[in-house]
Amino acid sequence: MNSQYSVIERAQLEAWFEQDILPKIYVEVRKARQRKSAKKLIQKSWKKQFPDRATNRLRLKSFGPKARFFVHLPYQNTMSRILLLAALLLLHSATIWALKPSRVWLATPESLGLNYQTVALTTPDHVQLTGWLIEPAANVSDQHTTMVVAYGDFGNMSYELYQAQALSAAGYRVYLFDYRGFGHSADFAIDEQRLYYHEFSVDLSTALADARRRYPHNRTGIIAFSMGTIMGTEVAATERCDFFVTEGYVASPQRLVAYQLASRQKMVSLPAEAAAYGQNAPRIRCPWLLIAGTADKHTPLADSVAVVRVARWRQRRQVLAFEGGHLQGMPMLTEVTFGDKYVREVNRFLAVGRHG
Image (cartoon, rainbow, N blue to C red; front, side):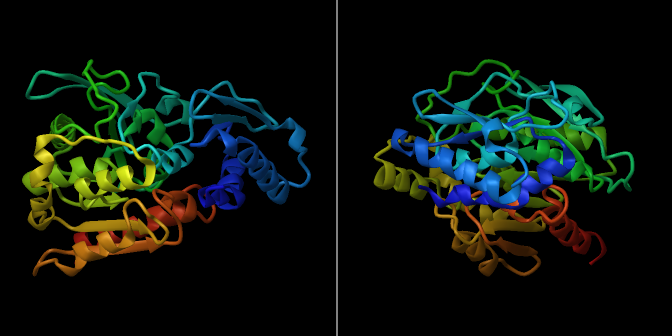
């Protein structure tokens, strides 16, 4: 059984129950024979953290060719909103590493009580995109900082809502958007054996420019996850970006494709632009925080450390390491509410850029 499921045992369950925000979660299992062991582990995790709550109220249903479990977690107050929790989905998107877009939003910011507006974007190549601009929480100081989110290869922007909520609660303005072919953005022919498309960088660039236009006096930068770090790196290297935060930084798309072939016998293709990808990181001038897990086999901590080691004078770069695997940063860096310690570390890094 993959050790990534051990994360269920502590901070995630506790934080989600405290906030009364978790109606159900997905757990993806790559091999059918792992279904029973996954179910047993979830039940064991439940008993360990909540011995007073019967596990017979846990309903697990496997579905689809990849044997995902759909887990309904009981609440005292059953909620109508249904949200695919970004924290777990991001954990399991690491097992995909090829495009798996979804057209269905699993929730909207309103589901979490977030103040937002829906935005419509048009890229330079005339593609229509949809986004959500989420305001800082009402009870905190406005950081006057806009974070444009570049997510990974799976789902759509609704899967990032809990990350957005954590950032909003710290006073950040969060700009979510869907790449072309994802969510409610315009149609785009996607080969699901492709790692990414260069056009997604055009989409990110469009969102970044729109965020800066709307709030010209804000600091405006990118926070990118997994495959989204590829687009983030391309955009941060070529355009004005006040800061860059990455988790699960992809240092070499070619090496990632080779790893997929060797470990999973899976053929994944790359766009032609990937040949020049390695030239981007040295060109990024803005402050760059690289967040990485010590147990990440897909985008190893060593790759993020290498970026810092080769930094030139006046290139401010820093690594934030946590104990965990690929994209487990927010759940593992949780103390009271989801991702609170994670966001505090981001705050600390950006504060140096502002005052230092």
